[in-house]
Length: 120
Image 1 (cartoon, helix red, strand yellow):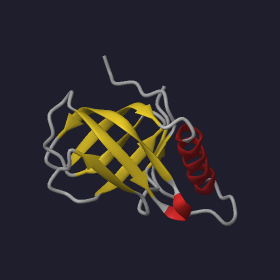
Image 2 (cartoon, rainbow, N blue to C red):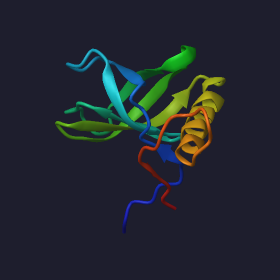
Image 3 (cartoon, helix red, strand yellow):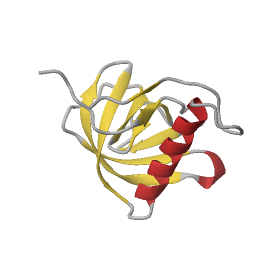
């Protein structure tokens, strides 16, 4: 059965960074894509099922932190599934993703086109 994602996601993430605890060999991981349900970060080799604390940070004082589970991991990237996050941060991540997606559809003043997918 193919993997089915329920959340909108964006790869317009060049200005986002992720810090994981316990730390990996990377001080701040580059965010490759983000959704309301999780994040894909550069770097890897973590154990699937491992629980990590995370903090995503970015422009204009954006901060999203909580606990996540390693869903998959290779040498190149690690996929994290959000388990628990600060209550006020949930809306922030939704707003960030929505803003980035609207920017891909030609809304003036937002970031240029980047990869986006919605899989049901």
